[in-house]
Length: 297
Image (tube, rainbow, N blue to C red; front, top):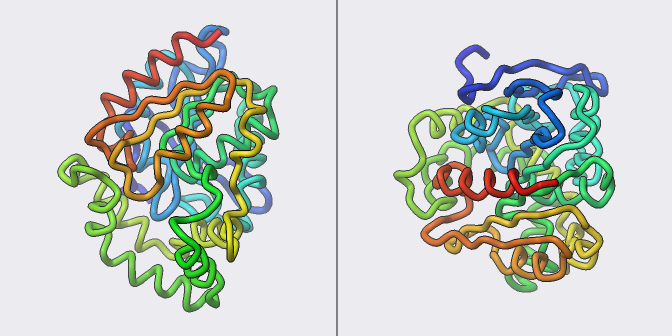
């Protein structure tokens, strides 16, 4: 669709993949810039997100002096025709395969929320491919949701028949302004172009399937199946955690706990910020990201 949001500095292309195609946003001077500027892979979050939404305000600045790629995951955006399993390990393998198909074998992986869970798995499953990690309010770092009843209720909801589950998702997609307001500390920080694309994504046929399948794959009746806290100490890559202090969706305690046990990790807690740091505080995200990128060996 020609009216879809496209971040400044990005061009959209499609890769044939597993019987379908992956939309890939690309920018920057290419992969042969030099070893001191590793390419960056951006992995978006769940819900009604896609690669253009969460990274729209930071893609261009990141791509000024390095190659940047950002795929739409299966079930999101303009990626189509690929089986949507929602399994975060499979998604980690997919994004690494997509990067390698463009000639990139080693990169900095940046993941937001659900994308942070996937980025952590890239580092665990493909350590040779990871020059560094930037994790923004990452998922995959909690043993259980708030309490046992909440965990059980979420698991039961994810087990609803597809027509009911995704029908409810389409109803919820009519209230995107309310949904957005709960994600951020200051709703005024979300500009009109992002709101429009978020609403368009919510109304897209098949919207919600990607995140629904992810929840089905990761929610258990008593605990989270994707909890990586017992494994993250194995990640040796330099890692930067960025987490809004006022995040209403992902408790910063997971980032705090993981950063404490990873050998080369740093945590930055951002005051007056909710879940969506690259959208609501892009200047803060870019300042810390660029400082981190310049220190990588």
